[in-house]
Image 1: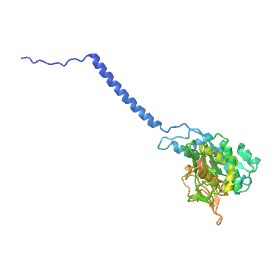
Image 2 (image 1 turned 90 degrees about the vertical axis):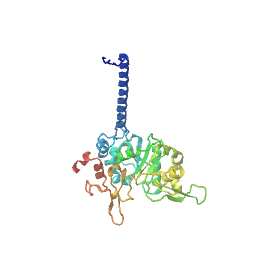
Image 3 (image 1 turned 135 degrees about the horizontal axis):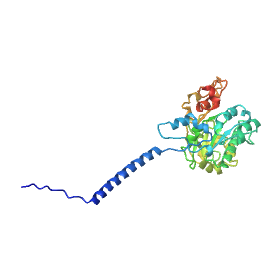
Image 4 (image 1 turned 180 degrees about the horizontal axis):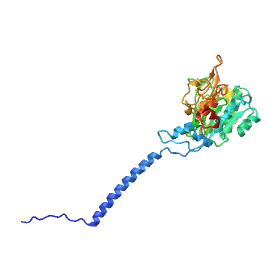
Length: 344
């Protein structure tokens, strides 16, 4: 008997075409999904860089951020949202203020204002229109300090800035680090950023309270290290401290300017201070400060008993040329600047 060969029935051509179309469609969807996920991962955190000084984007800090292991670029916004106020006095224009004007001020010219007691044509020319004389005394009394802080706060409240940052005339401000730190906080929320100089909250008699012998405890950020207040917080403080009320409170409580600020913020506005370790004052051993690129503020002083200098440990110019170390620090952070050429 002849064997019969059983042949499989042929599928209609249209069915084969539909099957192939389905396979191609599913494959395409999978490929597009994988590509989309990859693009989203690689685009996280990418921001367009802007800064008031084009050369500043070449600094070591920004270079390190751009070359880091994560995708992170320079800040999208400049210092246009930051109001930097510096308290000074006419007797320090040619000493303390001169080195500030020659260094970090050059990177924050449009954001920085100097509150002083006497007009000085030479200093005013170097500072542009940023030297603001007040009617405050030219001494270091509690009243004079509160008077200038009042002027700083009121001037900020009249501006459209998002952050109010106060510093003294014996401080170097690392503009890039300050900008980077403020990007971590929302100015539309209440923020009091600073660093205390004491190990526990200050406990004093509350002279504002009608209750006899009532005490109040609060933290305050030392003005010698600098501090920043968000726009939302200063608006909350407007009715408490603007238009002369800050000076009145300082006088009634018998407190200096930075302590009065802590009292207004923590005791009256009920906003706690957020400690920022990157602020540094002359009240700490500055030689121990490291990782200079990420620190916000620096200072200097002389130990009274020994005459030794409390300064940042940074190489550069000689101590005779640069006793504050601010010029050397400025070149350490910005080696591309022309003033730093001979240090290369």
